[in-house]
Figure (cartoon, rainbow over the protein chains, first blue to last red):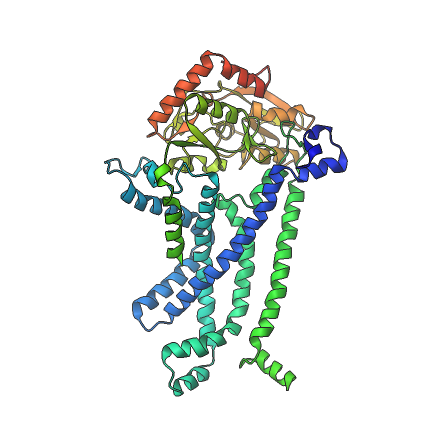
Length: 293
Length: 239
């Protein structure tokens, strides 16, 4: 990065360290922090949406929808996360490529699954072999987002389902007495009031999501864990910057990062809790009303 | 929402269909110097990178390099994530049951032990990388096998006393024993495998023929030997 980094073997002490920490590989390491943060920020709203869908369908009066909602939450919650993370990306990738091969490939007799191999024609590959590596990485990242969203959506669905049931029945009955329809009650009374009940569960989920992001490494996305391992490993003289096993320091850095992330989240969540309790028929809301009066 | 993402993904990647052409995606591990490693610029580098690029240029293929963990490197080849494996993978009968190999581009290499002291107990606890011919050998040798995901982890295990010795490809161990990095060669060398070849899907015969032709040419004109000497030193075995 700096001009004097051209020949690292001539460098000593601090300038060596400075050059080392700004090598191309380290810049990739730093940008992988953004990948992890992007994953959290993208997955959270999608998972919440999945959760909303799951919770509303689990409460639905229409039986098949209700079965779907219940099956989704109990199935995903009952299977180890890691199996979903391994299953969803592979299944989705092969599923999509299979569909594309039906549309885009010239008809052949060659089976797609044969002899352990999964073969589709070049035009059906997703992303295409010819597309730049960045598309392959984005594609892998998106598969990871979907896998995370399905898993965390199921947990969120359960939290929201519980929160919706926790809204005092009297509130809903009053709304019905005013002549509101089911949809109106849901939109005007149920959903605004359920957040305060949902927040403890959702904040738990958010913290678990933060801690689950190293699973990206498992999905082949080059995240901070991958780079910490790679950079920390013993580097022989074949590398520009030889050094002994420094994994301890890199993992220590990750530790600080994750602790920082959870600390910031806790601060934000506690402010949010206070805000949402305002004017609610809960103990916290009641305490606030009394303090204000 | 999921549907939206999927549709988005499909659209985004359909856009390039017209320009679909033969790009060979070369899979490697990127953690096995000097065969393959990720250099300080963050690119795949090493003997196999140089050889692979040379072969691609000779056979007028467009190639890109893809990193993949060692333990899933064969499954991901089979599911089509990339088209070749150049990752110091020895040709063995067991692997030949699932994938195909080109002729070897590296002669049958000796494997060796490295330990903290030369008289280490080679029937004790031996570290090896998972899924390698060395791990197979250790398991059959009567020693206790301790498997790790990467070569570096196996070396670290010896250094912190978890294992008595590490058993790996001799050339890959050289940097760890040469530099006063704390390890020394223990015991004798063991010849294993039929040399290293490029792994391919069995159905990919056209690519196999091209690569085989390229390797033959490089063997005949001596360039392959020069490359081996460049990366592995003058004592390395050549063709």
